[in-house]
Amino acid sequence: MTKYLIEGGHPLHGTIEISGAKNAAVPIIPAALLVDGVCRIENVPQISDVTLILQILRELGADVRTINRTTVEIDCSHIRNRQVPYELARKIRASYYLVGALLGRFGWAEVPLPGGCNLGGRPIDQHIKGFVAMGAEVDVRNGLIYAQVPGRGCLAGGQVYLDIVSVGATMNIMLAAVLAEGKTELSGAATEPEIMDLVCVLQKMGAIISVDVDRTFRIEGVKELQGYTHTSLTDRIEAASWASAALATHGDIFVKGATQPEMMTFLNVFRKIGGEFDITDKGIRFWHPGGDLKPVAIETDVHPGFMTDWQQPLVVALTQANGLSIVHETVYENRFGFTKPLVEMGATIQLYRECLGSLPCRFRQRNYKHSAVIFGPTPLTGRDIDVPDLRGGFSHLIAALAAKGPSNVQGISLIDRGYADFRGKLEALGADFD
Ligand code: EPU
Image (tube, rainbow, N blue to C red):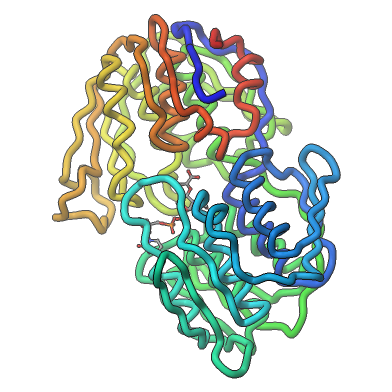
């Protein structure tokens, strides 16, 4: 099913339960490669990115058992192949974590360059810089990353400073460093909750990792690790996506599993716009209280800033706020492509190359349209939409649900990459779609 016909204009009402966090599961699963022994992960999201990474592990020789809908056990005691299958790895971004895990465990990795959403160049130079600082030789050619530790077979602890705060590079370097000989100092690192979830897993496995207030991780290499049992944290991107859907459709959604600490920054913005929420032990209820929504100025940033992955669904809600909202995207140079269909649906959104904000931004004076001004409220009208990427695609779904009239949304399978059972959830919320 790759196409939805949505009849919008109806508020979403009801309860849905969010899944485990995609961006925590996709590094935690490859961490199983670091040990001989069983690793058990609970609250695994049923999304296609996870299916693919589990399939890759199977192809490498891992024994992957599905215990129930959201629990898997992985045993990498009998890895027989370290060449990651090209077709599978190219479909996802997270395949890059296989480099860190294989290199750390076996001193050798051959992994296709990762795929993922087109949000800009998305280089992996910082990952490579880290591996090289630990003694690896890394060569990228013909679409493949070849990494190996010459001679000794084991990485050595090193000093790594990330020039760009990168979620992926932080976790990849960590995966490589836990079994390295000696200490690794990783500074300029990211500290997203998903990263701390991986740190929890690695600590359970026997690793020694500390983090300083200046975002420096210190990893003391150990000789051996053991299997882990871990319940993954819930998906704060999914939670914010449903919260934005509640606001955009004048709805009321209880998001079971949403947690306050990981969402604090989002909740502040949600409140400033005029959205209401109620936090309980089981989740967070988000609703539109009626009346006008207020415009807001936000800048995306690394944690604890406003997540880049939150901005796309929220922009749809901002088309309904009364006045000018500004979004300055400082993480990706090209994350506003999704606004074009919104404009075609009736939104007034102007993109700018200038930095419309005060955060230090790598894209200043460069030719990227990375700031958006949204003028609202503008009624949205349904239309045909081709889903461009994961978060942009979910945002288009929200727009179609908020719009008057029918929308034909194509390429829905892209949304399966990151939102578990969103069809069932849309049904539970009373959405009118086929
Ligand atoms: N960057 C570099 N060099 C590097 C690494 C990153 O220039 O070596 C740049 C990127 O091009 C980007 C910025 O640094 O402009 C941040 O990239 P980062 O490495 O933090 O992102 P990522 O690891 O590729 C993960 C998530 C993304 C999420 C970002 C930011 C996974 C699999 N992906 O990507 O999630 O947006 O962190 O939080 O964990 C999504 O879920 O839809 C998604 C895109």
